[in-house]
Image 1 (cartoon, rainbow, N blue to C red):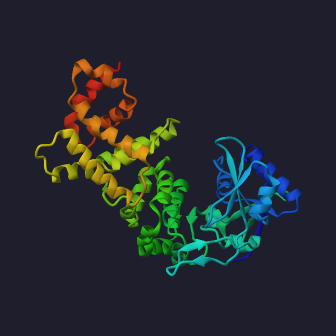
Image 2: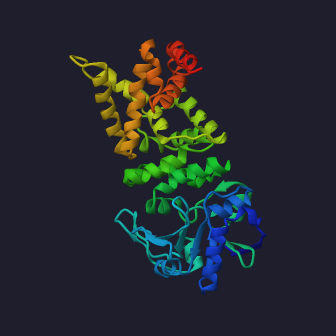
Image 3: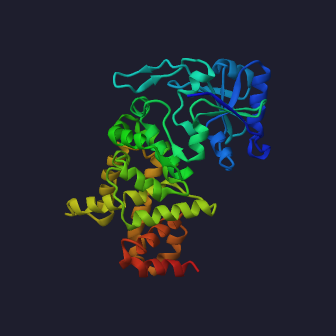
Length: 379
């Protein structure tokens, strides 16, 4: 692929000032340094980026020495986080070389071999994320045809897709996320490689997949993501117990609408939705002898959550909230008018109520009157 250097003057309002200051300080200290990846992609498409990443010739140790409020993180990939507040940091990565330490089946174990800008480009995942920006020259640097793919909105892998998926199977679900985010098409060879290699996701630790799942579904196109994951054979490696039904569809659309409106969302709600049908299926299978409804619900919920955490981790706070939402469905359906006001004051009421309303509008229309009762009592 031929190198393209395209003169583009970015609107300074779209570039994070802290990121600019980092690049300037590192450049003035003699290190080759660029803005890279998603922030360049988003600015070129006219979006204001949420995150700014930086790539440099400086080693993690040299970066750390240059910035007092910084820390080196990671073993497999050493990175530096430069801190600006309790919630804000900017990630700086050293140019990667082509050398990799991999397992016998190709999974990257260690990647702390440093190289040049050109080496680094070919270590990145998709062409639209392989763009660098030289602040001093106001130039976009493109070694991989990312500018062209961005123009036609195509998700294309840098290098051989199957090899790149063996290195890091998470790239498969990222392809789906970018497809939905950019309203783009996944290149046909990439689709074939995903379908062929979907089982590689089983190699990824459930804790790492948790973070990726949040990114997948907490966006404005979550129903598109869900259906594409199913179509490509990836969903069963993330949520093997979950199938699309009207409740899942309504909840994903509701989540996207809340995000568009600037309202808060929580992963606990989506996990509770995705696992609601599996919970009821398990309830129908277990023995009901000498057990209360609450005991049965707890037993079934433990089983379903245990199955899920073998694929995608559910932190304890999350599984606790999921159980609360499920248990409160029974309380909301079998309410005592005298205790209604007390239930409304519960910190879990709002989520459980929203859950009941969505059920009443989709798979459980028989609880519509009960959902209306709780709507009216809050007026």
